[in-house]
Amino acid sequence: MRIAVLGAGAIGAYAGAALHRGGADVHLIARGAHLEALRADGVRVLSPRGDFTARPHATSDPAEVGPVDYVFLGLKAQHYADAGAMLRPLMGPATAVVAAQNGIPWWYFHGMGGPLAGRRVHTVDPGGSVSRAIPVERAIGCVVYAATEIAGPGVIRHLEGTRFSIGEPSGEVSDRCRAFSDAMVAGGLKCPIEPEIREDVWVKLMGNITFNPLSALTRSTMAQICGDRSTRALARAMMTETLEVAARLGIRPGISIERRLAGAERAGDHRTSTLHDVERGRPMELDVILTAVVELADLTGAEVPTLRSVDAVARLLNQRLIDGTAVPVPAARTGAGTSAA
Image 1 (cartoon, rainbow, N blue to C red):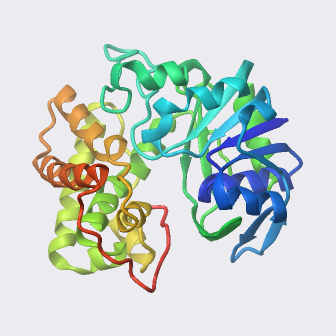
Image 2: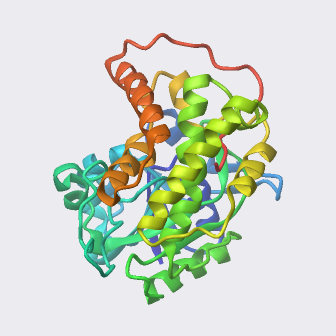
Image 3: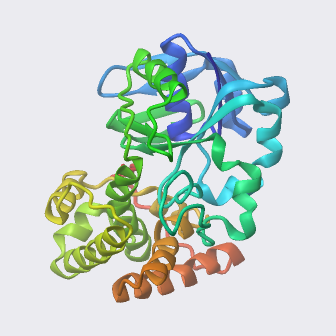
């Protein structure tokens, strides 16, 4: 099995290292000092489950790799529309794209029945730009329940979790899902095939939609947000509205709000990836996590006043980050981490 990891950052390099350890022919696509370290020393994984080093092929040029069986997409969703040129050399007639993204995916209404079948979520696929870069029929959904961070060039710190849930948008348990799941399991990861992968999307989204923007706006960890009575109430309101949108789309995640809050609180002082981005002056992965749910609320008639308010202030901060006019705030010196909220 040939697998290219496009966007071999914290999650991509971790998954790629595991796949390589399990016997797959893995090609990491990265750049800069991280790429040079991957070429020189391989992927060094530091994990409470045991450290290991994997030495898959690493390059900055997808044409050097050629067509593969799977592309594991480790890019943030806001970069998907621009990924077409990098993806094209990797695509064979049956290449599948395993998109490990947070939030509402561009394929959300693909492969389902009912009046919304085939509808485009404009926030995440503006003008069809993502669908052109990554045709929906190639997509395998992937919801990541692992937390990792880049500790240094070529070094991935695994914090918690090993589950990568995958599934076809149609709900079919396909041969291509089975083969990819087997490869992930051979590398030491959990990779269940979920016939209702959209349920996993909303379970993960309950945390992301709440803690990613709130952590960025308050410069606080998940434990700090949950530990303050006012922000805990705000988080609860955001999750309540999120579940209302999901219910109107026929999805009822099998996890309570209090359990989701308790899980976030247990994560302690790990900082979300969105907070890391803001501290580094980078735009947030906001559209697919928050703004898309507001769009789906408009589509379904759900009332989401809290989500709208947080989306408004978060989008203003994001625009300031894009323009380079946001006031920089120094990163915290302790408790750094990327949580699988």
